[in-house]
Structure formats: C-alpha cells, structure tokens
Length: 120
Image 1 (cartoon, rainbow, N blue to C red):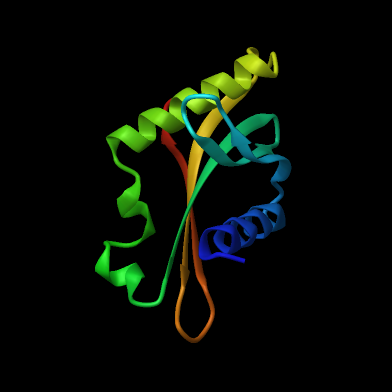
Image 2 (image 1 turned 180 degrees about the vertical axis):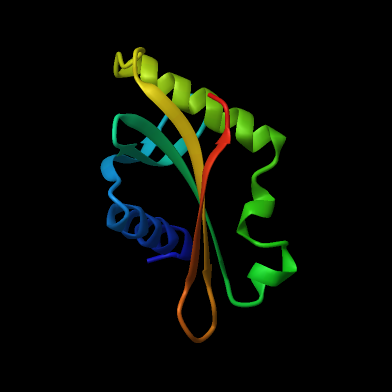
C-alpha cells in the first residue's frame, strides 16, 4: 500500500472512531480530480482531503497541509459541488475538512483533524 492510501485508511479509521460514517472513498470527477473521503458527521456531509507525509518529508515540505494551496482548494470545492449535484443532495449541509497524517520512521503516526477548512 502506498503512503497516500495508507494515510487515507488511517484518516478513515480516525474519523470513524469519532462517529463519522463513510459514504464514499476516492470519488473521481471528470474534471476536478478526486475527493479522498466523503463522510457524514451527524447530518452534515463532510468532504475530507487527506494529506500524508512520512519520515523526513514531513519536516522538509512544511507538513502535510502545506500542499493544500489555493488551486488545490478550488479543485476540492468544485469536486465537492460536483458530488452534491451528481448525487442530487442539494439540500444537504456540507463542509470541507482536512486530515494531516504524519508517519514517522519509527513510533506512532500523528493524525490531526482540521474541520471546516473552507466554505463550499
């Protein structure tokens, strides 16, 4: 399993332990890439961007969330809007979260959840 898929799996389990329910993973859009995880937090639809780094890469590149720039954020927002319209869920409350996963060379992974990082 590559580091990205490992991070997504760790993030899914982390969020499920906190009461989230998985709706879909790796939802692909024709134009705006994919959404790592689509989950429900109560009545709220949550689009989750998972960023994973391992070993020294976590320090060298500013941590996992450093790669969510303006362009990436816009792509995620458009992908989320596509998901909502394609599933006919227009009345759903929705938000965009991020999960940072750092997998060290030794020891336990560090997982952080950042809810509502951007408006949809």
